[in-house]
Image 1 (cartoon, rainbow over the protein chains, first blue to last red):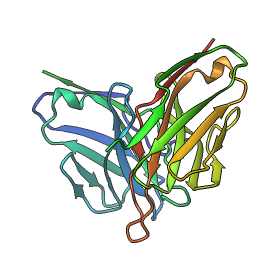
Image 2 (cartoon, rainbow over the protein chains, first blue to last red):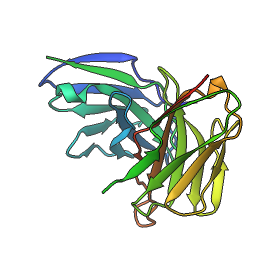
Image 3 (tube, rainbow over the protein chains, first blue to last red):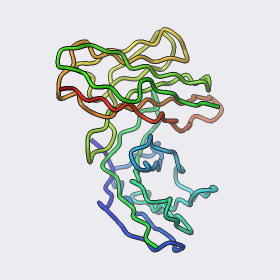
Image 4 (cartoon, each protein chain N blue to C red):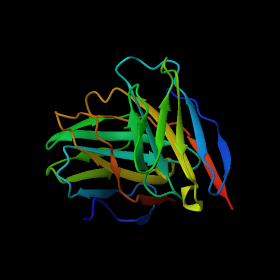
Length: 111
Length: 116
């Protein structure tokens, strides 16, 4: 079973920041937080990952709380093409680098 | 750069028929994976491979077999298809660089399989 909890769906206005929360209260010390998204039934796409420090790349920012029990993915200027299902996954990336997907959050970006 | 390519993209089978789904990657990745995705759900891992000639069971392996005879290819077989195996199947691959362990998985576009 997935070890994260995410809201089922969220709406965001185009051009505004989209903040997607994720709870992972049972995360262990060697587990990373990964975010993927899936646009319209395509294959999932990697967004970002982090351990305990905040991370930023060209797609998004990841804010992890100090106790590591929750995190927030931030899309700074959401566009219509960001409408997708967003998955928050925790993994220690041990043998096989396996991922366990939950149901994710459906993000709808509206004009 | 093709990335991860899945063949075929669509297929309709009758109950009891067999078929093989092919996944090919051109990124020289060591790890490869097969997932299935049912409507409204996240992906579930069927089988995976950490290198040529090695395979391991994932979360939902029953009814499927896999083979990894070449590093770049990972085959998923259904010996006797059942309606419960109607799903979208995704293949993925990832690298495992010892200097930087955490490598993302790269996914194909999926195979939509219907079993009547």
